[in-house]
Length: 185
Image (cartoon, rainbow, N blue to C red; front, top):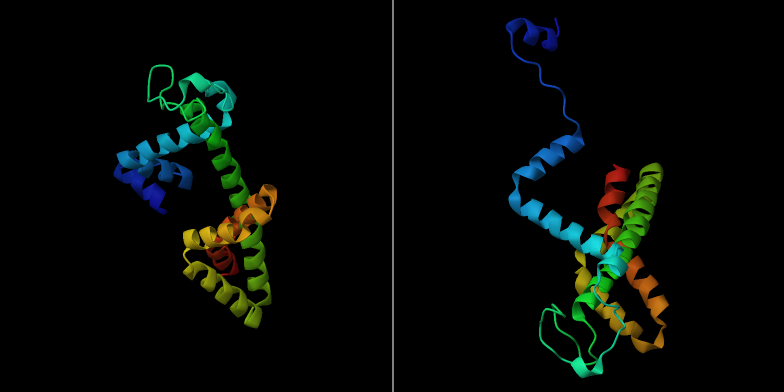
């Protein structure tokens, strides 16, 4: 007899199998700090995506008479020197976070990490050793310090579009090490 048939004969209820996603969701719901963090992340990304709808003012709208005001009912986070609403500027800046996150995930983990892992696993030998050692070197470098150094090295000599591409690709480079090692195995 199978285990399922034995359980039914004994009178014990048979539990339906739970998918990996269902199990992850069950574990996540038990941790209140994780749920609060998930809500905050969803709010930030949602406000960035729907910034033109959610923001109370345009991020470029100036009112020079209301410069450097503190928080008030009209401007929840106050205004800057040019009288621009800081809350609107924060909401619109979340769009940058959304774009960089999607770019890093797509370019780094999905494309670069899987390609290097497939190459490493397929070729093996010295190719595998070189790819894994380069990945180890990148993993050992502190990513924030490297990004600050790279950003300062570009300074004003490079146009901002080039800087964006370089920074997102470098951010993507720090993520695929674990992906390539998993795919190669």
